[in-house]
Amino acid sequence: MTSKALRNASKLSRLKECLQNKRTLLIVMQNFPDPDAIASAVGLRSLVKTFGGIQCSLAHGGTIGRAENRALAKYLKLNLHPLEELQTHRYDAIAMVDAQPRTGNTMLPAHALPDIVIDHHPIRKATRSCCFTDVRGTYGSTSTIIHEYLQQAGIEIKTDLATALLYGIRSDTQDLGRETSRADIDAYLALYPLANKRMLSRILNAPIPVSYFQLFARALESAEVCGSAVLATVDETDNPDMIGEVADLLIRKEDTESVICCGYHEGKALFSIRTTSTQLNAGRMARQVAGPKGTAGGHKGFAGGQISMKNDASEKTWNEISQSISERFKMAVKVSQLTGEKLVP
Image 1 (cartoon, one colour):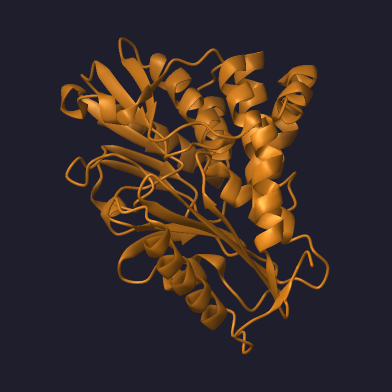
Image 2: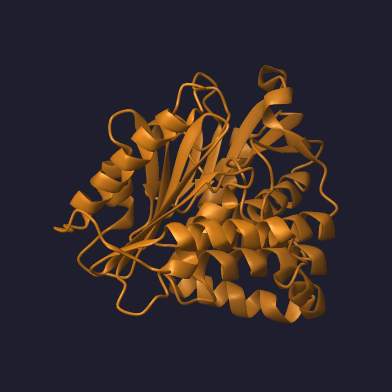
C-alpha cells in the first residue's frame, strides 16, 4: 500500500470514529458556493451514507449565483438549505467542506465549531480544534480529497457524482492549469471516463441572463489600469459570484500581473484578487487588503475577502470602503501611481 493510500485509510478510519453513533450530519458550504464546494458536499454525503443510518443535510449562506453553478445544482437535484434558516444545534454533528471555521465566508455562527473540516485552503487556527480535519493546502480542489476517500472506501462513483467532482476539479484548477497537484490530475483522469460529458457541456454553457452582461459592462467601464495591475468594481450586486468572474477575465489582459475586483452585497464589501506573479501571494495580499476589520483567505494565485459595512449600504460608505480597498491593493502590489488609465476609454 502506498503512503497516500495509508494516509487516506487512516483518515477514513478517523472520520468514521468521529461520526460513530451520530444520526444527523449538517454539511456546510461557504456562502455563494462554487462547483468545488457543491461537488465536495455531495461526495461527502455519499461517503457518509455508507457509514450507516446517518441523515445528511446540505446548507450554505447566500445564493448560488453563477449560471453554471445553478445548472450543476439542478443536474444533481439538490435540496439545499439556507443555513440561516436551520437550527444547527439540532444536528449531532457538523461538517464543513471547501471552507474553514471563523474565516468570514460561511454563515455558521462563530461559537458553532464544526466537528469535521475537509478543505484545500491553508489551514486556519480554529480548524485545529475540530474533531476531524483534513486540510491539504497543496491540492487544487477539495473534490480531489473527497474522490480519494470514495476510492479508499471502495464506493462506486455514479455518473452524476463523477460529473460533479470532475467539474469541481476543472473549475478550481482552471482545467488543471492553476495550482494543480499530481493528485488532482490523477482524480481528473479517473473521473473523466465516468462523467456525463454531454451534461458537463450543458453546465459549462448554461444560459446567461441579461443582467450578467450589464454587470460586466459596469465592471469594464470602471476598470483602471495601473502599470501591471488592474482595479475594477461592480458596485452593488445581487450576484457576488460575478466579482470573482470579472477578476478571472481581467487577469487575462496582456501585460497584467495582478487584478482586484470589488463590490458590495447585503451590507458587506466583497473583493477578489488574482495574480500571475511569482513574487506575489494572492492570499497574503487579500489579508492585507481586508485589514483588521475584514476577513480574507485564498491561495497563491487567487483569493478573496470581505469587509462588513455594518448594514450601511449607502453610496458614501461604499465609496469610502472601495477607496480603502484600492489603496491597500496598490500598496500590496507596490503600484506607485495614484491614478491609472481607463481600460475602456
